[in-house]
Length: 487
Image 1: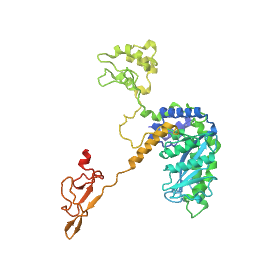
Image 2: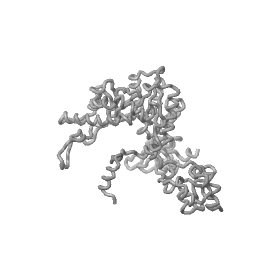
Image 3: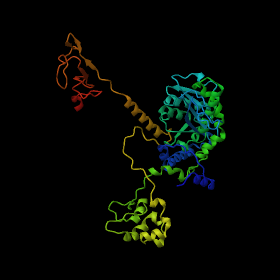
Image 4: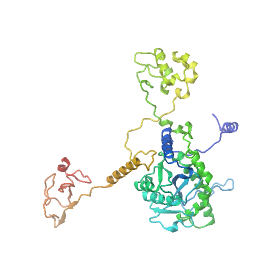
């Protein structure tokens, strides 16, 4: 068994290798970043660039990131052998403040927009923060409402001076707070063209995530650590976050960092081939094979196969044998017509037996053909809570109309019918008395209201307004009698 000495020697012999800590990437991000989604995004980007002829100064990216009042202490020099080395933080769990930032491909940046976890925003929240910054407030501190995004768009318009004569392109993710009809109408009336990224692909396609937010969080964390050392006995509050951002933002959002984010994503300069095939390898497990037309690519349970050819069938290189045929009779007719085999087997070797081809043409047999990589099973047909999003030009009329229809359906779904009225019997001197002048009858058991026992609950039909015992119904929240239900 290889030990620690072997690993050390192996790394010394291979100077290009090093032990690194991988970055955690969720399964949604790994499988969504595939060639199909990326190609759709670049097709939309190419269409927008060709339609409006945007320059580097007109291409903007906006995104949000969160900062907390509890920093992660940095590394320090301590005595060897000391087991525990502590550093003071503001608390056990921090309070979140969201920062919305917009940068363009030329390297410019507008003042940040803060969202505080308060009911009402006050101007002193951003005191001593970056010049020109402002913000809003809600109960959570995240950009949860379309009102927050609309306020940010007003802040963005004020600092970029965009208008209908000089339009700009704004790239953003598919968060539901960005997809409000009010925000889209505001962008259309002010010359802002919205283009959304594919879902779960912002870690590779969004410039802010690639080159700005990482350094920004490190510098904010360092500034918070320094603040705790220079203010002994005090705790860091949410009103001190703008001060830390004012110190860290000029060091993180440099023109070179911002421009490199647009270059490495292929947005500006436009480069749709910036990503290679190895970049899409995590999504390989969910790739589905293209169905073959007129030529089966996988054997069935009754196929005439042997152990030597089974690996080729699993790799999808050879067709299955028709009923009543053998391997030798099928090779001459089936193999030359199969495109995957024709490109790998020389013409003089086509028609030979399976074993002979295996030994004489090594280019046909790849490790994946012998033992295919594991694949995910078929997707289950389950109902999704939310609609599956994709990259789209949000300010186009068809997309806006679809979002407006979806919003209307959501509003109608939230509207609930009025709660049914309940009538209770009162007990007075052990004799039941009714709370209505009219003696109603139960629609199910036909018992009168006056003869009911004390404490029994009656419910009213939503349509005919007639009454029934709650015990005689199915106990639904909104009662509809059997007469109205049949109609």
